[in-house]
Image (cartoon, rainbow, N blue to C red; front, top):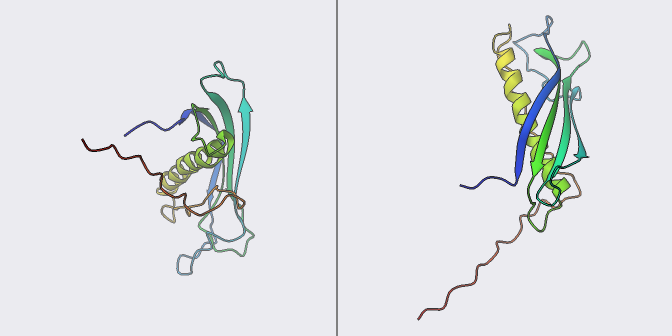
Length: 156
């Protein structure tokens, strides 16, 4: 095991709202992934104390589900997280901002997902498990990189 070049230094939840939907019908399929489910991530560079050793970044992540009254959803929610990250060195073929945006947003989303699951577990409709999402932009290739071959040592 080795540490990731991206480290979460601190996170905050400056805004959290969650309300049970009184008109939710548990006998019907929940519309959790309808158009009212929204996730947005914004990346901003920060001044680094040691820019030659690492870069510092801030990510704001907003999650919300505010459907219309006809949608069959168990909960309405809005969660805002702010994460402060340090990136020591991105792999040579990945720009640091891409590494931070994709992986940092994923870390924060996992925190929000588990927080909402825990919060709603004591709610009237049971726990809400948000869908897994990808923060990889559409313009980044989804093709896996070919494995790097290590040179073999000559036998003596």
